[in-house]
Image (spheres, rainbow, N blue to C red):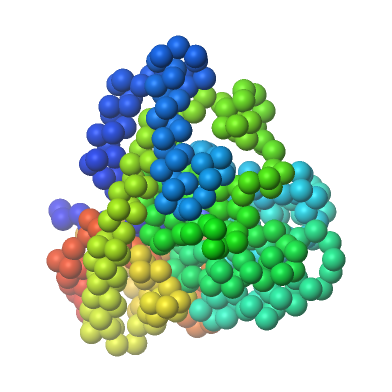
Amino acid sequence: MRKVYFDSAATTQLREEVIDKMHTSLKESYGNPSSTHSFGRSSKTLIESARKTIAKHLNAKPSEIIFTSGGTEADNMILQGAVRDLGVKTIITSKIEHHAVLHTIEELHKAHQIEVKYVDLAVCGTPDAKHLESLLKADSSKKLVSLMHVNNEVGTMIDIDLIADMCKENDALFHSDAVQSIGHWEWDLQKTKVDFLAAAAHKFHGPKGIGFAFIRKDSGLKSLIFGGAQERGYRAGTESCHNIVGLEESFALAYDNLDEERKYVSELKQYFIEEIKKIFPEAKFNGGCEDSNKSTYTLVNVVLPLDEKKAQILLFHLDINGIACSRGSACQSGSSAGSHVLNEILSAEDLNKPSLRFSFSKFNTKDEIDYVMKVLEDFSKS
Ligand SMILES: Cc1ncc(COP(=O)(O)O)c(C=O)c1O
């Protein structure tokens, strides 16, 4: 059976170069990076080289990059640390954040009585800047804003500079979950005044279980995990050296090839939208994902005009035809509650129709899209 993968927002296929580098590191660099002998020193060198590579591309300082086990840990480190170490009393966020952010904030509310405010969203999922400003001005407690750069389900992008500047003007800290964006968009952290970011390698053709937090210098944040002095005291535990090497390689290749791959993937997305419209002229695109100014080039979330019976078996039908795509985020597929993102932005009528997320990468082709269209067309006529 033919197999096609259109679920890169859930996780991406590794690049060969990344696998090769990780393999070499696993074989040769097994010293504990904290050991002072040559084996340890060579592992340490690899880690510090990765930190420098990442910092250089983001225009940050190496000491501002802290390796974590991925996006979830980075989000937790930042949000929990902001409350425990920085005296944050109010968190302003949106209802369409990833659960790594939403559930952490809910816990902070329960455990520390943190006040949580949700910014209004436009139908496409963009936060209402005026409402955000009014929330920022509404009280004088110590505040943190947490808004994701690119939404993982519908692809909506925020104007990160506008929000970062607004936070600065109103004396609030700003964290952005950039897990869907780092590796796909350029960053200049001298220009973009975020205080904190979260990133994960497996979203840009790197390994799972590794990511990083950007923590701006002198933020005052401390470690959540106690033990050794690794990661400059921000995160105890022996570093996952081969994963860090894989993160560095995937990150460097993502940025070295950014223009070319962005053009290629954007064209795939455009082609997908055009082809879907030919088969389903009434299809609707969620989160403004048809508009390249509002949405990432890496994914499409589409409502298909199918009846309820067909809607129920659509994902299964695609799966048995070897097509991998997704209903919401991969993390919620075990939950029966449906997508909290779509629940927030869709009308009741559209919520009853099947919404699918197709997410693209450099490994996809137009021919694969033609195959998806053929399967969808046959299914709609069956
Ligand atoms: C926006 C966003 N934030 C956080 C995460 C969690 O990252 P990780 O899987 O690396 O823990 C994901 C992954 O699905 C994501 O898409």
